[in-house]
Image 1 (cartoon, rainbow, N blue to C red):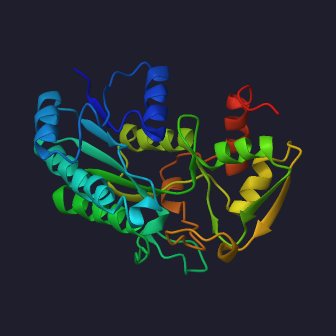
Image 2: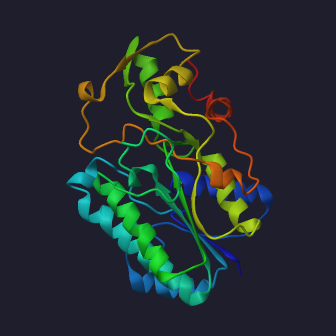
Length: 285
């Protein structure tokens, strides 16, 4: 029986993690919502107790940030808080380590410097509030956990900003992208590698922050994505591109604690270049 359980195994990060473990020849049990609804305490209890994993990678999440403000508000809290509590409490019962993905949205984006892992949290949207509630549920239920806050995630196996920009560039001569929100892009590959690194190297339990090295605005990110495409990218303000959910203007998180583990973090430009080279056949102009 596998020592690893992946919850949310068919999502953007869960799929990346599965492929990484496959490459390494490591066995795991994969569960998606249809196999194990983490909001169903009984289902979680039955499956996790039967599997008795040593490690649970909690990749299940509700990530529709704008919908979480209204039509998706209930499911946002069910999945990100209640589901996380279910996994944490059952993980504690069977003695499993839990690895949970959180978000830069636990911060309000008003700090001028980098956010440290122990800085005060102050989420301003429903998604950030629910993810922080998930963090607290884990901390209340167990001690053997890794909480990893990340941001601006892109990867091969789901919808994300990189795919959106590449798709729009096919049909538009000019794109506008906000230039007053600054953060760190994160490749799912880097994130999956760090998740397994923490476990495999028996790193100290607690809260970590992991994105690719460097920072940029969404506009600068878009320019790098489309630098080889025949399309103009123009900067706009957040006021010119209103969104339902509040977005932090400055959400650069410190990577110091992650770096102190010895994990080597590629720059976001390097990660993006590797990612685009992987998918370029699908998105050739």
